[in-house]
Image (cartoon, rainbow, N blue to C red; front, side, top):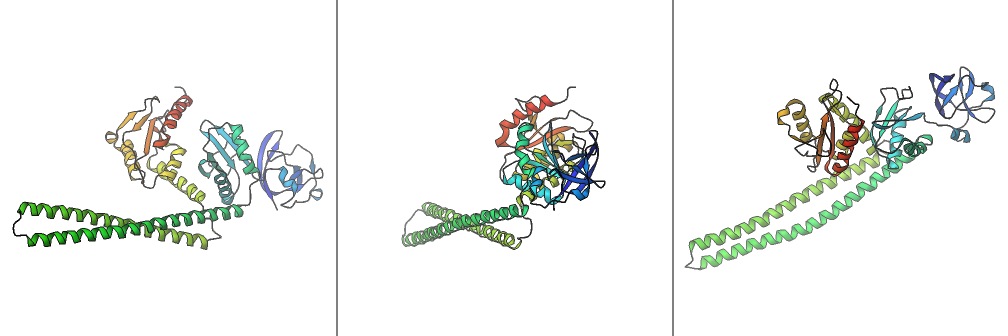
Length: 398
């Protein structure tokens, strides 16, 4: 049986919210819910107007989940708020519904920056349970067309979880296969290098025997020959040892992936999704950065960048500490194309490269923050500079 959260209105004024009401069929075929023992029609925006006509409960049976009347209403109570910071999907429901919506969005390639419990009223004066901030510069009408099918008719989460879990298994199996192919190639190459090293030693021994048989030979020439051959052998051995280390790391990675696959296969009934990990990681980063640097306004896209591209945080924290606590050690230069914006002079190590970037400018509300700060990566630099110009235009005038 489907339940619905509805908003109660009177004379166009919002009174309260009524949660988890069974959906009923009114005598005229429209959907309705009970409020104070009377059944009112559910309007398009999931509201009921108690000034409207009503029906007796006996006239309005509760409908089954598969009833066509369900399709006439929004089973998820949601709203799209659009403001100068972007688009926010706000909705009511439990943790499972939040996960469900994010899974569907990821499955359909709809990018989002952050998702968490809502802590404020939206611009329609209603406080919802959850929010999802979208990563989109589209107009509100275009965003609505994209998200409406997801929120108005969400699919069965168990089907989606199963499909995503199968995709994870396929992805890890594929990665294991590639690593095993690399391991095979390394093994073949390693055998060849070991043969070369043995051959170099054989040549050195042979040279030594020939030299021992000669009675007259320049001492300096002998020392030079020995050095030359010793260097060649050392180089060959270094290459062999390097290949052995790579080989061992490959074996270690294969073992880890194999264990992950086995865990995935054992946990059929658990939610193991990249989506949930991303949501938890971003929210943890948000709390951590706000706690460490309360005078920096770090935007949500920065959290998304850190979660997706950074595997180590030491270099990032070092630069943020310099900026906040030891300003003399923080080097920066102005962004030529964006007035009042600066870029950290030190490129930030992410754990895999040095493509991390820090941009900042003085915050317009100096009582609350010192700086507006963005954490980005090198490849989005041109777009980021353009967004800085747009950001400046949206700032409140002094």
